[in-house]
Image (cartoon, rainbow, N blue to C red; front, side, top):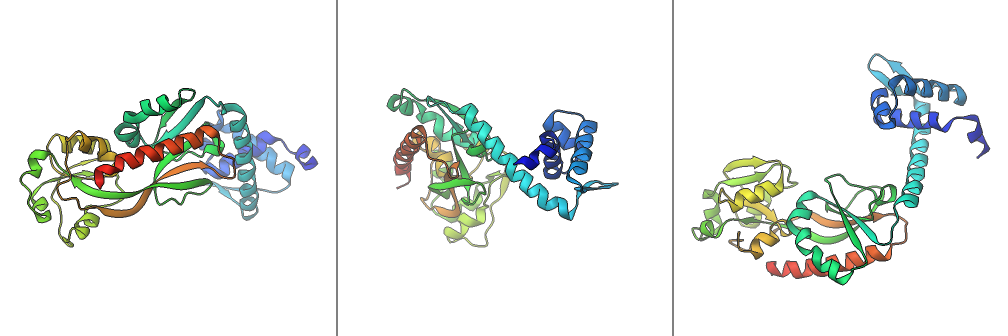
Length: 298
């Protein structure tokens, strides 16, 4: 590693940031310095390496062919350094940091946390509610739970629950329904960010080619569920979103017809890292809670 003595690591860090983010401004924002400082660091690094890494064009910085291969290695190197720093800083055996989507936290997880505390009083939970996929290897997160296909680069994913979707309505609306086709007369409140559409369930219900009348569109599934509970229409929900509302009988599944989306809830952990005991304990507890919760749908 003696060749590192010939270059400044701060310069390489600036080069990597510009290459990854695509502009001097974005790199300056991330590094907390001025655009001029980033530009000078890049220029010095190119001089120390003896070759240009970027082309300066009217549209900004463009990576050269040689620079592309160098930047790929720099990115790997700084990711490894970041992981090492995160590992040194955040590990506290008494605190378990969990990254989950806000809707999963609000509609399913929070109702059950007291039971985890009762079983593991020595472990304190810290919930990081975010829609961003967080890599436990390069952050202070111990474990994440995400919905998707299960194919995310740089992390280990483990299936927790295959996603199924079904319509939910208030008991009052349900009383007016006799068969799945009757649901076509009920306006739909739509989750605009959902990874699926009504046609998935309509096909399962034998209503291929039919369409729902949309009343409201929300950019948040939790708001959409609230609208359904307010009697504003029917929502296409999934197990963890609707479980508590079904248990409390605020909503009902009028037909018991459920469709698989091809997505699922997955545990997200660091690749190639021995699993901490607190993570193992949390995963075992979540699986038990999920099994109990899913009895609603049997």
